[in-house]
Image (cartoon, rainbow, N blue to C red; front, side, top):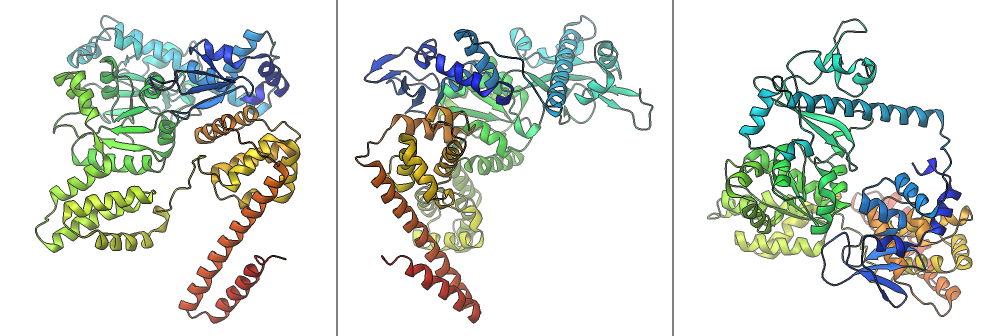
Length: 590
């Protein structure tokens, strides 16, 4: 999308824009030295930690790690895509934007997206009109009334009704949209063996729930059968707009409340989410009956650090919760779980006990691992050695997936106390588990910028002095960086150097969509380091980086040599030994 506006136009808009002025429209800022500070618009706080740098034209919150440039600020606070944020700023600073020049493929894809959006909008209007119709919508209205959904919430979610007839939607929209376009949108289906004009409505006799993207565009539909019929829920097929594994229901309404609370409540069903929102609990999103995906977990990570899983308390709900935990854990989120009373889902619980009780229930949610351990202990037999070991063996695989060593050790202690087994014995079993599945226990890279290291210093040096940056460019490869986030930032700096672009933080922020990289960049931009002699500092960091790289290579060769020895592969062992001596020799000065 950025390519649709020429880079020189974006740069002119950027140069004419004052980030302090734009941020001040949403945040009360006060001058603090060379910065401006205020209460963060992305999370709740009492002490200002949101910092704006007029010199570098960036912002960073030291409380929630939100950060970016003026474009990113508008995108986040006003729910705008990049192009719209640029256009909005262009209007403020009076910079005309030329009509975009697109390739044939880009134009075709964009036209297809617009056609699907148009078809979905027309379908939603038809469905809501049908729900409101005195005769045709009576059955659906009665169903909604029976579930206590009425009034403003129906229009807010644009709920509708598809009649039981086979071609009502098609006949209504065929004069406005071609049958082929309706099929591309997943609204109608072609009859098997029929002629080119033999189509029928995909959704019939269903309560229609529009599915929306982050910006509130209708990208598909979910349909709940009313009366007899299968499946109970039917979603749109995947289209260029709708990918079910990338969508969380209600996200367009929940994203700002989630940021304020720094917490997402994850439920399973459409009506669970709608009920919560209708009762003022707005940081709730739903998976809509599908297993949580990595893309959905990433979407949550972009907005919060804490997630509460609220799934049904039956066996299927517990399995879904465990799968969800494992996916969310990969994103390094803090995950808690609330187990509802038997027979309840969030919809029924809020109806029966009220929103205040549900919020207290969320407040009392326990860490997922604690709940899992306690559940295994409650269902196991702790009176016999074999029973205790069964519980241990049930829990250890889950503990093996925890990346952080310290956190894992704490849960091992908790398990040992609950089961009545020594920590040492549990750690021994855990080590065995980890050895059997190494990919699950790779310890996450340390991403903090608080601890000085040569990789971080090299990034600071390259951002502070273009001449030093060019010198570093000729001396090292980013493959030598161990920290993946710093490596990615370094690669972006190298790209700027290679294309003779400025190596400035606000420019680099435009080159990545990853929230963790944006947060690290904005923090680096505001936490400068003064070097007495930048050239010498670069030499020292390069030397240290190369030394660490060689030591890692030595460790790897030692391990491979020992493995070859144990396997009886003498020639292979000798080869590794020769390479090892050569690498070790390179560490000797002179």
